[in-house]
Every structure is written in C-alpha cells, then in structure tokens.
Length: 554
Image 1 (cartoon, rainbow, N blue to C red):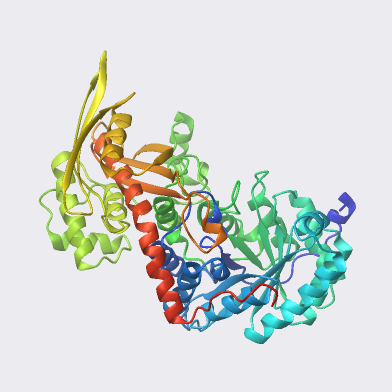
Image 2 (image 1 turned 90 degrees about the vertical axis):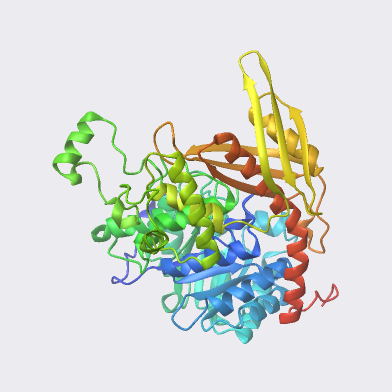
C-alpha cells in the first residue's frame, strides 16, 4: 500500500445508515479476565438491544456447549422480528458452521460470520497451508454456510497484512458463493487510517461484485488507531463498523462503540452518515459492561469517562458558563449522563424510589427492587446526599450478583501507625456453617483477604485491585473491583477452558474495607459457581439441540 494508493479515493457513497455490529459478547469477552457468565451475557445482550445496535455477535458457538447455549438463548430472547440481527462466529470449518447455524436458529434475523486468514504469515505459520488451499477452503465454506443461512459475513483475517491481489481473489470467491457482507479486519492493529482507507478503496475498485455487498470494518487498537481506522473506512465506503462497548477486546481492545457512534453523530456533516443507535443508552451500556467484567473506566475515557464533561480550568469554566459550546462539542445528556442532583432521601418511600429508578431506565424485579430499597435506606443513613450515581452503583451491585455460595457476615480490622493490620471475618459457607477466622497482612485489605482465604480454602491469586469513589466528599460511596486467578486449571472438554480462569468481583459500600471484602467474596463466588454453572448450561445446551463434536477427520 503506497501513499498514492491511499490518496486515490473513489469517494463515499450517497448518505445512508452505518450498521453497528457489536461484538462485545464475542471479541470483547476474549480479553483476559473479561469472561462473562451465562446470565451476564444475557443482561448485556438486552442492553445492546435497548441501545439499538443493528447486529449482535452473540458468541463463538463451537468453543463450548456453554457458548452455544448462550448464543441460542440470546437468539431466542433478543432476536425478535423488530430486534437486532443475531450473528455467530465460525471458523471456515463444517462443524463450526453447523454449530453457529443451530445456535442462531431461533432468531428472526440471523447471520453466520465465517473467517479464515489470508496473510502469508498466518497461512504459513498458523494454518500451515498454502494460498490456493485457503482460497478453495474459503470458497467451499462460504458456500456451505450459505446453505445453512441466507445472511453470510466473510472475514479475511489479518487483512491489512495480506497481499492485496490475493485477498481480492478470496473476497471475490466469497461474493460468488453468496457472502452478503465483507468484513475487513485489522486483526493486529497494524494499519494507519490512510492505509486502511486504501485497503477499502482497493477492494471497491478491484473485487468483482463489491458494489453489491456491505463492506465492514473490524479494527483493533494495538497502536491506538482502531476508532480512527474505522472512521477512515467510513470515508472510503465502509457501511458497517464492528465495535465493542468500552473498546474491550483482545490485547489493547477493539474500536470503541461509544466513540465511533458519537464521532459520526457529532461530525455528521463531515462523514455524511449516521447510525440508529439510541445515544442516551451509551453511558448505561458502558457502566453495565464495566461492572460485569470488573474493569473500571479511566476518568479520561472519551464520551463515558468521569471527566469527559468535567471542567477544572478557570478559563474553561468561565466559557462553559457563558456558552456551553465554547468547550463542549456534545452534551452529557446526549450520551445519557443526566444531572446528578439529589432527588431522594431517607424519608423517600418505595413508590418514589421505584419511579425514579424507572426514569433512569432500569426495570427491576420485585425481589431485586426490595434489595435495592434496603441498600438505599442504609446508604441514606450514612450519607448526607444520595444522587443518581449512588443509586446506579447500588443497582449494579445488587442485580449483578451471582448465587451466594459464600456470604460475608462480618469483617473487622485493626490497623494504624506502628500496628500490624489484623482482620477478623465471619463467612457463611455452602454447608450452612458460619466460620470465623483471623489473619494479618501488609495492610487492612491484605489482612481481610488472607482471613477470607483461611475460611474458604480455595487457592487463588489476586491479579487486580481497584478502588473508585462513585461520588465526591468524605462520605463518598466506594466502588471496588478485583480479579482473581484460580491456581489450578478448570477441567473441561473445551481446550479454551483448560487454562486458569480469571474472575472479577464488585463491591459497593461507604466503608472502603467492607466494599473490598464484598468484592473479593463476589469473585470467589464466581470462581466457585463457574463449574456448577458450566455443567448446568452444558446440560441445557444438549437438551436444546447441541451435538457433540464429530470425530476428527470429517
């Protein structure tokens, strides 16, 4: 790709809607420590539907019976006639395509996404194959996928490091066999915006039938250019963008959904394109995913970070007070960050709280609401003021809970200058017995975690610990997220599940130590429940039609 190629543009097509293809549940979940439970995947899928994404890539069904079951359930519940298209990823392999087809079968609108590598480095070292063999396999597998599903997306993996002429041959074959979308992945985040635009323009110029299909972008952020590359693709003719909420994904992540959408929304005249996204759901989508995977957002995260609409400089504050447009190119309300004024207090009743929660966009079951109401009252007794951020933190903490295999009943810490921190905890265990133990540590949190470990007797490694103040002031609610890695491999038939898994925990409390203890116990509960859930989900998958892998050599 030369500079001349990049500058030789065909020019964008007439204005039309850009399709948003969300792969949070597939590529996003592949990030280390971002694994979601079955119920968490469903909750994210429901929120993506509220966000009004066009396509949800619900998973990789061939990976395991659990993955198949999650995709199948999402297809049945979310894939309604007026809902998003439900897509499933598949290798260029008959078994993978079969599993994708059966998993998405209940959806009214369904898609199979077939991929195979086209770069020489992948063909030689990963596939251990040849260009001609890969070309023939791509042709054969797209044809087979077309026999199982009308809507077929094809991806030449590592497209931006592929020989252009060869990749064009593969793409032409995919179109001939019925592919309706060509997705062009910058798999390792290698391209620059100019280079990525040149790749798209080259496809539009040189691939027969390219004008009859949707061209899609799928950009990774290894060099920090995933969003810029995706938008350069739009200028060159891309009409579908593959994204994840908060930009999560393997390595440095994927193009961020909220950044792509708001760039198109804010610079509509420049791009001449728009999306169907309900932008007021962006902030809630971001918070939901952040809470579930246990990855706090950096304060300076574009669009949804805590500082995205904050102004500290006196000059900036003066300008915004006189006219918001002086230093804000979009409003906080546009992305769902509404005012945080105190509206409820300790004298507020159930009806007022439920009504306010519904205005925030949450629909809680009676049981969840009862738990939220109790926590709200406790919070009101501890804080002078309670605002929407506090309420949403409590909702997230309560509604994202997994079954309590272990329950923290008591935590007490002694610490201070010149004193060895000592913690005592009481934990209700699965056998119904409440066990108490004590240990010391380098700090109060370390002492608490050591004491909990003495009770539960599960070998783990703490890989991440983060504290965030939800609101301002000395009485701020503390939000703690932790990640644990189990020290022994998980037994599973799926190769992907044999490596030690990472589990996240989340705790919210005005007492930081209590929040830290709750987060740690939450992560332990996920760890303990993982095998139990996996066996249950796999049983459901087989009952719903999942078939075991065929013998090698089919």
